[in-house]
Length: 266
Length: 308
Image 1: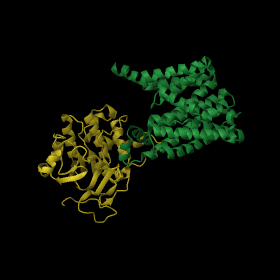
Image 2: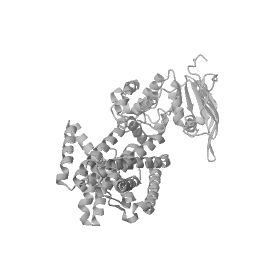
Image 3: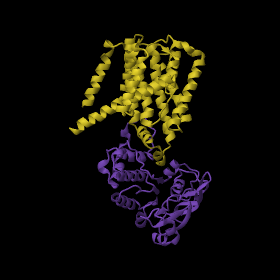
Image 4: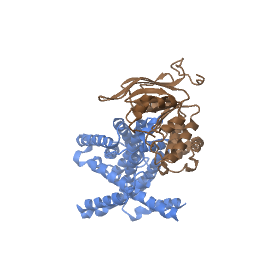
């Protein structure tokens, strides 16, 4: 309640509370299979919020619904008080709700600088200019270098993304997402498939870029969640099992049962 | 520096070539260079495999041919008209096909190309199986006589250089940067707030226009427009040329087109064996030079120069 609301939604003069992203009764079924059932989720502005759950709990589906990759069977998604249920993913990205992907989503045959610059082009307005030289984008280079420096990739600016290590690709992807200057970043398993030596820098990086933004992450690695996230929502069988701080959630007997059987015991 | 020396040498060779080599053969190469460059713009830089690119090439030949035969239009305006007409056709094809990727895109473009083939077969002005013959080489700007193959060569060469420069500009433009990003990861481009379909439609439009320019040039070189130019054989040949030369490189289509045209010409007297030899060359390149000839040369250059 102490967080100041800097941008009021144009369509709604009185944004509800300080929730920047909200799901209401969200459901998605594929054929007869209910991947996500009646999920109510509220993400507080300025927080780092985690969505966890055992494999097959519907985390990624939920995530895809929030980022508009999938259209819900039922329910609504609100961003900044505005109903975005009917919008396309590119449109919500322009509003400031930007996602990353589980598999490393760089542009492998573009240089690191170009990777970030593509995102900067999104709001630059000359992306259809096929007759102009790339020099027309020179004014974006400073900002791109700044973002690369922020994630520790300044020296690699002219390397192709495909030449980077796995951890550095993730960092590049975060720089690309940051280039959109998102109000909300949706990060899909930012440390998936990483060795321990890479997990910590990425966790630090996420914390570093979080001020002034809201971050919702789907994560398997509970130690990352424990030291990063203020609020945690646990999904199971497509439904919300419980929600709370790490301390509350981890001591909840239902959660312990859900995670038993060694699905993910890190 | 070496690059400029290379360009200068290539320029001198291109200017001197018709004194030594049959101009028609040279112009055939240039037409296919432009055609392959247009195809490469789609496959190499947008990741779209168009399996009906001959529809733009062949239809443009008919349009330019008809205009030159039946109106007093000058040659450069005929080229321009055919280019614009094919850009419009490309835009329409893009509207239908750009939402699909991969093999679906290939099949849709193939189907549209076949449709156009049969349309042109039936159309009264194309001359059906006989083709449209006796296309005149009208004067450039109405004053410069290009009716001899020797002078026409220099016009075709100039247009080819401009067309390659245009492809270079498109690839190295703000639009080209987004286009290459779409090739690499379309979903990610979408998540960054772009509408990839719009970019692909524009890419198809530009590529179709260039393919049309190539077809119009070919109509004046051979002074005939035929159904063969619209057929799927030609669509296949252009894929062959581009892959052989090297996908996603600017020099690739140039090398590929030149090699295939020369190979065709040289192997002509081997009859059926020509196809077998051509197939073997293609197989060898696919197996041993997956990046095509230019790609392999680049890799070799990097290894030799960077190592030492």
